[in-house]
Length: 299
Image (tube, rainbow, N blue to C red; front, side, top):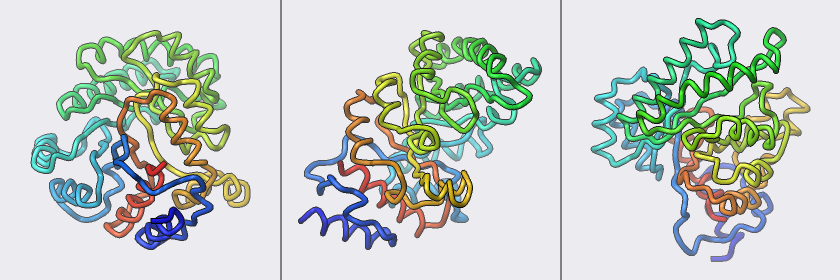
């Protein structure tokens, strides 16, 4: 099948206006993608049991589900659904690291979040995940960059014994936290930690506000443990507000997916998964974004 015909047929399946130009350089797959498809559990908005949610995402072509931890869903139900469907749990996200970050000036808050991430690491081990996403720190008008850096460094180091005990890695993520705004700074932070259990959980869309994902991939290379997939439009950000930039469909924003996929391959990425972290929806929506991710994986 011709490339443009192939992309057009997938566009019809997704129900969105994906164009051949939006994916210039992509070709129909001649072999399976080397990467697996993941989805965040919170994106599944159907009123279903945990098991049926696992069945739904498997039916839509996903290989894994990412949970927020410490869990609000019974572990027993998750493990049963995982084993019955063979849908993996490759990673988790600590749910407390934003409200009480590792960089917080309050020592009680820092103690709380270290313990919370410790629980995330233990639960991740039980679910078979190999990485926990952690926001390393937050800079604000009240919390200086110097304070955030020192506290984040100290408390990430405190988490290393938890990671060593569980065998689950800590993936630090780039978010809109006014902290670690360039790939060279991310690399310097990881070098300061200097431990194989601490690396990066790279969000391909978050970085578009102040950079290009391919640049981060080039610098961080194999230090990247996992990848989050989302889209972002600088034009919409400038015209409608910063967070509105995320409202664009996958493939219709400013992520140059052919270039990014080549950069992922060149980086030596071994995390297997590209996990969607988008707004949630019903089966129709999830099927659409699954097909959009299929198109991205073609390159």
